Length: 223
Image (cartoon, rainbow, N blue to C red; front, top):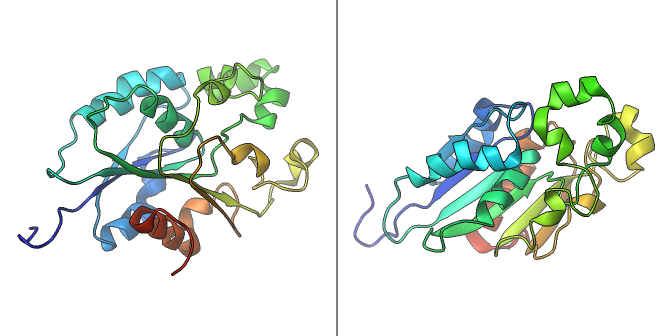
């Protein structure tokens, strides 16, 4: 219960990435609960829906049902594709929604070079589903059509390339799946590079601490 002298607890919404489930965000969710936030994780069938369908059928309805205290804000922490889904929701959100800060972990904000290369193969389109047609680096891809990031959005990228199979596509500066350069987007408030790879960035204590700093202060800088 919140005392009369304490502000109401903010909520953090977690949105997972491609091929993941809500369970993949469990560890970061536990950390945020320990930090005093109310936490909810929203799932969506990432292999079976487009980004617009993920927003319309899953993210939007769950957020419409969300209960939060008057005077509190709703923050977001996302992983990979979840950052693009969040941006698609935020671009059409109700202005009355009490949107707080957002931290995007390893987001393909300018599209994916891997998708550019592999989506020509039918089996890749079958495995990845509708998003395989949306996540390219071309100017009209979904990530490149969403406009600037919402206010107070920070980006955390990993610097460990542990998937050499894609190195010829991504170059030397990536997290193994997303290039560091393509994680940037217009309107970002802050950016930090940490020693993690694309898959394990959601499991790293240094990442959790950076997330908490940004949600609390709007900056990744340590006090």
